[in-house]
Length: 154
Image 1 (cartoon, rainbow, N blue to C red):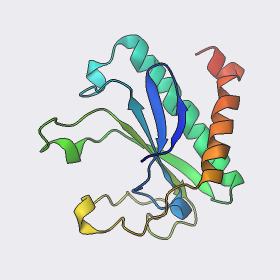
Image 2: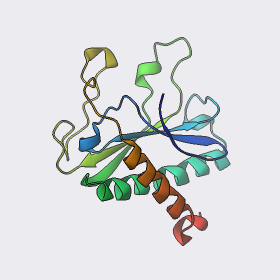
Image 3: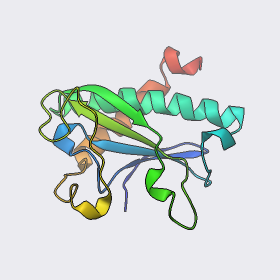
Image 4: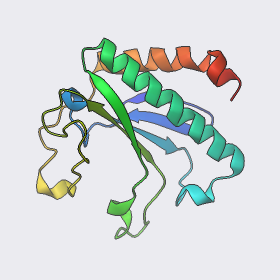
């Protein structure tokens, strides 16, 4: 089960329980619509605007909070892939991955493209997810950012 970090009327923000990026390398968060959507072209303009605002807030919160937790995140990568769903009967669906990029990363190295092989390869098996303390820090920072002038005017 992916731990809930935040939710809005239309989206959920989750800490990935089987991350593509180890906690020490920067961590992994997913933003999902509450209703299954094939891809971003199927979003209404208000939903697209809400998703964009949410990705900005969550990315900023993730970087700030994880740095407070001792993970030297220098960048957040935002990805909307869906590649692994193309062969499933239900097909791919919209979800945004936020991958933290720690300057001291050992596996998913800072400044390099992410390596994202299929799950069955075992590549991710030992990756540590964000912990409860990380999630609490990110959650608190998201709440704080929603109240700032930058995001109130969005």
